[in-house]
Length: 192
Image (cartoon, rainbow, N blue to C red; front, side, top):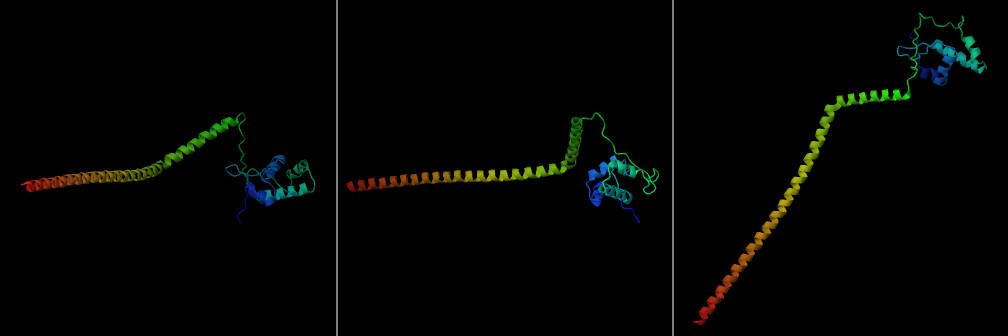
């Protein structure tokens, strides 16, 4: 049967305490909680049983010093040997590292992530931008061509009206000349 291991948040839920309480008790009681390869605490049934006992002792009114003495190696609760459990120390912060330095490091890392994402997606971004630009240019050109056609249509209509009015004026002038000639010729015939 496989052994069940819990991460700290699941173990805390199982024990009905907050994760920071487990970390505090681990430090104050000098408990050896095994860790996985990434340095995260892992809790098996043995560790959960130990914490259940600590919770009971706290309910009974024992202080942490008294509980620590009870948790020291005894036949009832043996501590894990180095051969059976590999304990990986959780890395501690380096002394003298300021929060400004950490922020600069974070910004550099974030900048690299963004630059990598842009590089990876540049072809897609270029295609999207080109598609959007060509669509917008086509719409603008269609609009300009329609505007030009309407402008040309107005100009040709105006030119057509001008030509027709000129033709009407010439016809009227020609008609006036004909009537004048007829009137003169009647007048000439009438005098003879």
